[in-house]
Length: 188
Image (cartoon, rainbow, N blue to C red; front, side, top):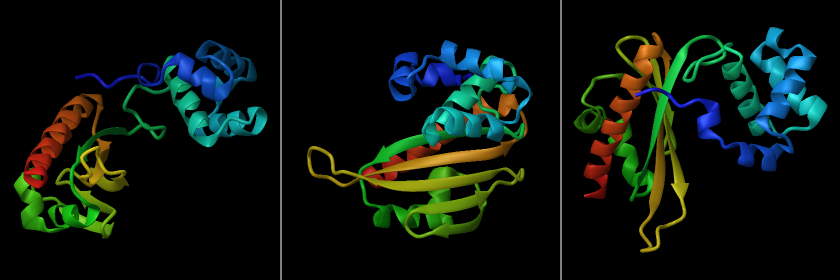
């Protein structure tokens, strides 16, 4: 499965509503300013400083620009490394979910690998190191209860330092499957 580009993830109408310009307009301004020679940070700062673009949107425009100009591929970070992620809504609380993340045996039940836990902040985030040296951040965000009153959380997995572009699709599938397995356990 290919990683979606920034343009596929964020619609042009949404971008225009948030920033006042379309992709075509932003990219023309950036080209005129010489941004193809700039690093990621400089582009984002220029958008925020010169054009008062909100930080999140400045990052989005920057990533889209880099992808459109062949400076970065979808799934690639600004430092050249690769990443993949997945999210899942679970019907539980952060506190009830936490043991399934932090306890090695419970984590193995749904993740099916033995990766070293290298840190975390109970019950919100956990960091793992995979056998190949790649890194994983698991973040649990509380959400408003569902219509039925059940508590909900969003679990996000961000896997960085992947070896190449081919690993991105495979890793996304791995995380979608793992989070589905976890949902089956905690949602009953």
